[in-house]
Length: 183
Image (cartoon, rainbow, N blue to C red; front, top):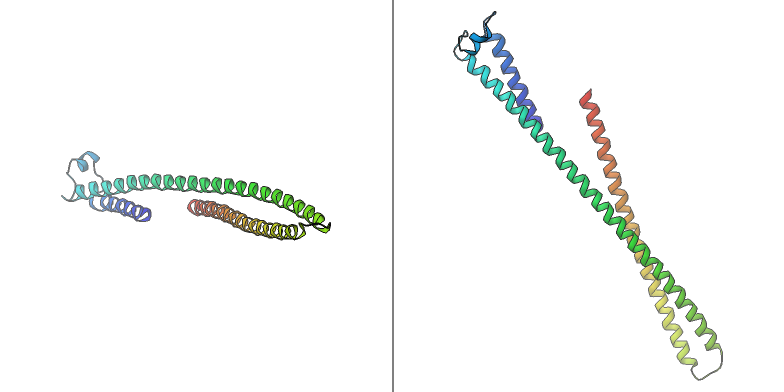
């Protein structure tokens, strides 16, 4: 879109130059040209049309460029919001991981105490052995939950890295475009 507008402005400018140098007499008086006293009757309308086309293309190009920049700013803000959300989710997952570690340690201490009690002779030996098995299953479940949380944490970190890399690539492309535009 912006390239088409720039091309339209350039073509309008070329029309203006052609009309100015081809249709206007060699030593014209500007007032006579603007007053319609040029060599040909369509010259003034061609000059005015080309000036109007050039001005319209220039104004439209400037407006679209501003809209494009505003759109880029909005996209950048959305990326920053996503990054902040991922950081917050990461912190929440780290907190849950710490809680799971503490629960696991407590369950291990309970299991060790029950194992020691079960080694002593008594009537509740079978019940203790069963409770030890239940506690070990709970420990295994907690470990699997911890592993799932760590996997999701790693996935979130990978997403965060991808977003940051995309942002860097976009910045590099912008810099390259600016360099190419300057050259």
